Length: 209
Image (cartoon, rainbow, N blue to C red; front, top):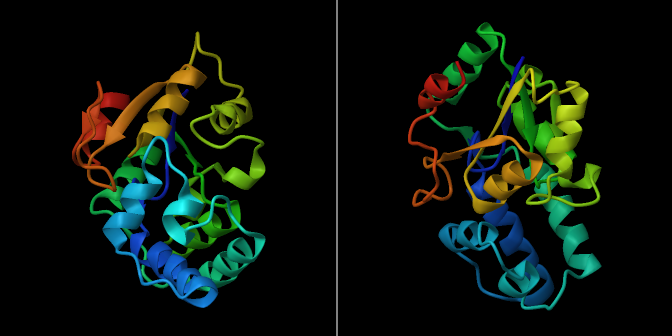
């Protein structure tokens, strides 16, 4: 058995426009702060070490009102502008045709992930879609990946698994979980420097097949 675990945002789909719109909604509504750019938001999210409340809302930690307002806004916003990266749909179809098992491990809330993947018509392709709310520790902790591997009764002596992502958290998560990692440069982090890089989705086929 072969298993490919995908990150979602910045790997399968581009969601930066909607994330930024919802963050700016909170900034304007709760703090009357000026809008942030999409590039700033994506770079901040993908930093290995960062304080997102400070970067986004100028608070030392997330305030409950900010979290609630963001989630209420993003629940509707998250399906307004996301799109699959070029070649992703073809890649998923080819992997499934070859008997590869597919799942998603995302630090986004599971509900939003399900909504976005369903909106883009690919949700049913995945056996497991697990978000940060379903585990005690999100990526780079390997808990999310361990749960997916347990679903498949993964045996490292008999099976192979890869984590495909676009940031350091995905790579560290894979390493901690004891599986191989593949860094996708077409998403939010084009300048990744990792052992296994792919620049187009179809390049993954040469690795896993």
